[in-house]
Length: 337
Image (cartoon, rainbow, N blue to C red):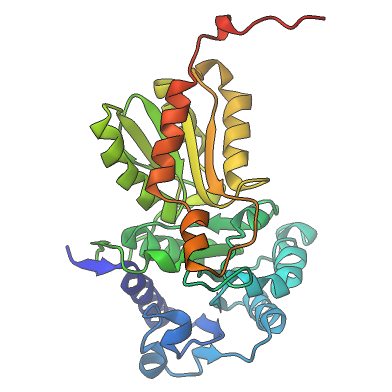
């Protein structure tokens, strides 16, 4: 099997979809520019024509609305937003329109649109170019949200998203573009809503999304040096997310750390933590820990970025905290009234 990087896998998925399905087209800003899309769309306009890769004006709302209309008319558009931050200008057509039409029309109308948004943080870009807003969209009924972390999943989840028949938000992270892995040349699909165990372990469960799934695997190396055997779950999809897989792991390990490279308060990590606490509380031997960004806008200073962004070392610290805070539930003192 061949080895591709993450961006190459995304490009191959686009190429195969454009080649095999005349309903598929791509619309968005900077489709012909490596500055916007990196190598994830490189050369596709030359291969398939600029009538299939429509480089749009800077109007996220209009571009997304046009794609939603095309999807309702029978096309299979992929909308490209090179920065998730500015996709906020398209919240109305995404949340009020695409997410609701199937319900409003009792299933007689569907919206088979893929909304590809890129998290493009770091590099001293600051608060308006660095935001990871996945939990906002995972909150909305009618939207599916996927976050692949490997080249294999990057290709397979895009294939699945286009075929799904419903609005799917496909979120990729620029910090993953250089990650390499085996990718089949043929078309294949990765199911939406199914996570995967990247590493089995018995001492603690680490549930991670996107870039943090890669960091969780790096954290395992440091944990093994301390004699800690961690299980790593890459969710791949956050709406829906694989509750059964997480529950079964927590029943085995009794401890949970959730890593998501977005803000701490109200984030997706909080959703996982609350669900586990509500559904499998008897399995827990220790408090749940979350590894998230601080509740502050992204800085523009490189030194401050090093303190702001999270990675493998923060996961290791969280695991240590969970293990050190463990105590018997019977040791908790009774409240005094």
